[in-house]
Image 1 (cartoon, rainbow, N blue to C red):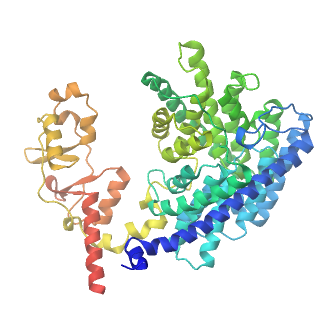
Image 2: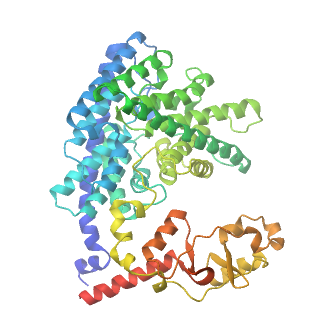
Image 3: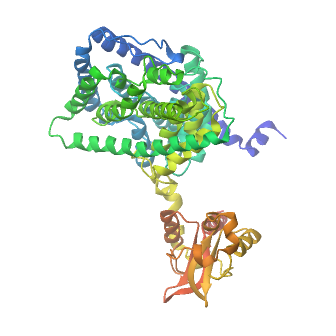
Length: 591
């Protein structure tokens, strides 16, 4: 068999398209990250060092962690105000899309603008963000990196005349490559590019392009800036005691609750700034002034804050005492809302990591001093706090665990990090720091054609439902229901009493009951009585919308004239199978 034909059979046409495109995006992301990295350093030297004789500490992988005193602290408000003014003038005069958080803007372009970003946006975003961060604004570089890379990806897509679908994929790959490069976290960045688009979903098609682009960008960026992880190699810590999971669970709960406070504060202050009757360019100026006034008393709020996070990991309580960590949790929340929420250019990833790390450090300190605590260093709690907090507010529980692990050079805390991050993710609910995130692909304009095509609207529930339905009675034991589900490989059963539909029981309902109580618990005690139903003449699109909207996987099909009369059941799989069959038949008829 010829190599080309064999390659085509193995997905070669896909690879021949996406490997070169992804590498090209990665190259752009890598060099873009380098320019952004040094632009922030240059702006910091020019504004903070030259102006106030102050240089914030850096993490191990990026410079000196030395804490220096501020030569001219009284100039800090002037510098942050100037930074806000310059950033506002550049962004609002040339490209309003460059204000605020870059990741959110990239998500909006992906979902609502067919993956299109104006070609001038990346350059303007780079300059405005470097000024905001370099002048002491509480913002991160991940937003600019993501928007810059996604923007160049979009421009590349238009130059190559890619269709809308491919342009969106290349944009998602650009987001992953930008984040993977600037944070030296290629694997986490690649997954983040697919995960961050949705609150409860993945952009699966973007994974392979994201991995290729992210690894390429990372290799270029690290070749210039060094291969050491951002926070060095944090070693000597391992999860060996299952009882410690209780403490990590508490940390996850705290991160979830404070995450809600962060999001509400951020958007609350942003709303206030939007309502102010002053020119738009003066809003980030005012935000900068307020941050500068805070910085006179608490300089730790300025900039990205990675140096302070490094001190927390190292347990350096001389330069970062408990009281400062505690204050910094709330101060960083307000400083970020003032810097980015006012219209300043930057990201919220770095501030989120700092807030989460400080929550972890404070939690460890309390446990260590009040309880007989086996963990002698705050590092594990700081690292897990970083993961849990952003995993909750950013709705990226999987990718953030990988990213922070890469940034700290350690994978020994995966078990506690999963516990804490999932808890923070669940507790924070649907609240997200990224307002352009959508719930699932079904709510995205990028996939609207897949879920709302006339085909789904034309097909009826009766065309896909199963008429032969296995049921149980309210008086049956849940162990019987569990056995029926296992034997038939299903996850839910309608409940009938005297041939009338009275409820539905799912595998999740059963699993909520402790093992020892299942033998004496009846179906009627745990079944759901508030039923979401569908009808034979309803469209598959309407049925699917009900499932997505209520986060359920099946619907009882009942008679419209008698809602208690069960005539079938339909699942998401049934809808998908029927849809695929109709598409197949349609293609055959065309051929």
